[in-house]
Image (cartoon, rainbow, N blue to C red; front, side, top):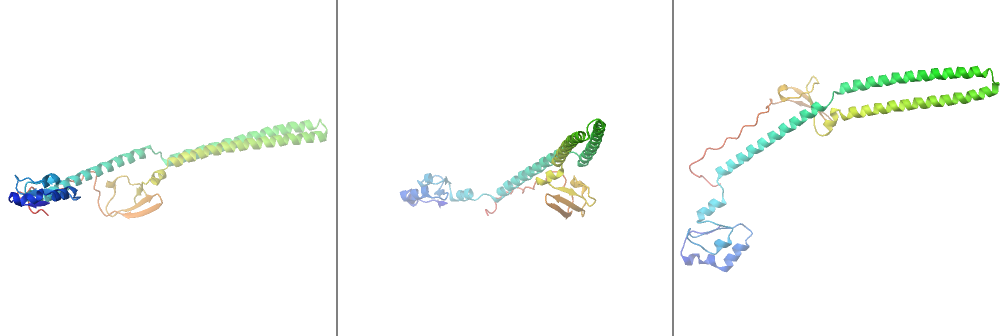
Length: 265
């Protein structure tokens, strides 16, 4: 603040000097000019960042009122609290929606186990049918051995038996590979729908002392023991405060307006 409380034209003339005006224009610090009374005008008023009619007015412009600062701070705090509350509600609704989309892991495991049992039963029946067919073919070959030379029939029988064994082994491997691939696909689907994938993205599962999942804060009593499952393990916790509920936080009380300005600091 560059100020002088009144004076004659000669008293105010130093503020018209070129060196003073250039210094005011080149100043990196914001400058408020308050030279003379309201009717007085000097060249430094045009070079300053702001002109005040009196030195007192310059002080008021430079220092804000404490009550106004408190009021502005209270309004910003209230807006911040409301924004955080809305963000939490949005995340809670999104988490609830994701929870509805997840299937029950127990039912998926039971369905996969039942399908595996069915595939095993089909494979056993297929092997039995193949074995019966090979036995019938072997019996047919044995019956022809009686009419053919022993050496020729034995060689032919070995070839047929080798081909039959190779075909049976290939069929069994193809069946096992197909069943194994279906089982792997079911296991990957089950793993993608598991709640642990959600935990790996930064969420947590809260359980009570009985091991049941807690989905609402109102279901937790003060002093209750909790088990929090995170991505890399479990954390034990104890509730020390009651539920705050979902109501918006109360707005901070605003100070009553004062008739006088009070101190500036």
